[in-house]
Image (tube, rainbow over all chains, first blue to last red; front, top):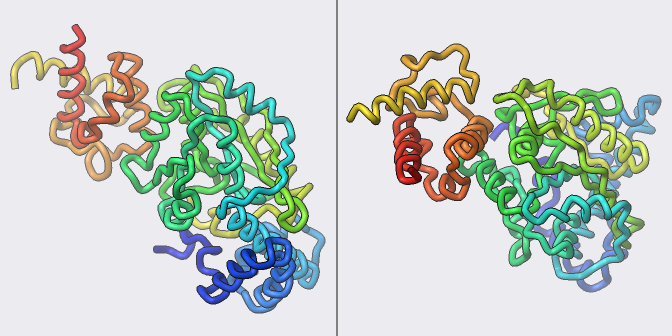
Length: 304
Length: 91
């Protein structure tokens, strides 16, 4: 598998370290584990050149005036936040709960009023996105998650026994027909909106903080073809795993009457809305946007 | 192959070209045994979505019927025959 397609976070940490943190989380709680992350992340911030290189494009665009030392500090903060988010995800996975605040939940409620119509939730590599899936259970609508095949083992394990149906993108037709079926049943389909599922996937360019990213085209075409709403949702960790803030962005109104096989630029205005929402997250919460180089698809995306 | 099947396949090739905007193809370019995806016609997963939606729109074939028969996407002939049989059963 090419390095670009691998999930960087899957290659970090070892069994001993992960086991240690699991024990700490169980014995002392997530806040104590989050405090320890400051020390562990320092090691990675100093020694992990691969991760630093992967984070640099995002850090350069988010902190354009930062010099090398300042950028290293921002990298450290990014690693700390990511470690703490992983702890929060494990805490939630074990069935525990944290206080939740919702901003504009009416957007989601309104979108779910029509029980015949499905909904695409665009999740992003921002904060604790796994929490979104756990929390959606309270909306009493079946939830599906289209995921990249190489993330399957970890994600499937995380949601095992829960209400989430995993759709693999390495299945027939990239899992898209399963998404269509779920949307036709009026269910929620969560799709990672800011990462291509490999370089083979058709991608659309968007600009975030002056940096060009390539994002998957499939959620937008699915929304248009299935005549359903598409809505970005962001889940931010509050403090040291002490809570979660949900931001439900307004649904993006897609033109449903598209020509057959619509040209890629037809989606540009909608993607710009998503990019603006994502950019606001990066501005307001810079250390909770986990856009590493492999997610930015700087290699050779199949642009449409 | 009987005349009805041949006629349906010819018509279905034209529809497929229109749905998917295969501007560089004519019905004669599509062989019955051509694989739809990958090496044959070179369609991709987004094309599959277009086909499923078009089948519902033009032939009233529900997604659930397609869902149970993913093998119909193997070649042009398997897809065309499935649509023809479904269409005949409904009328």
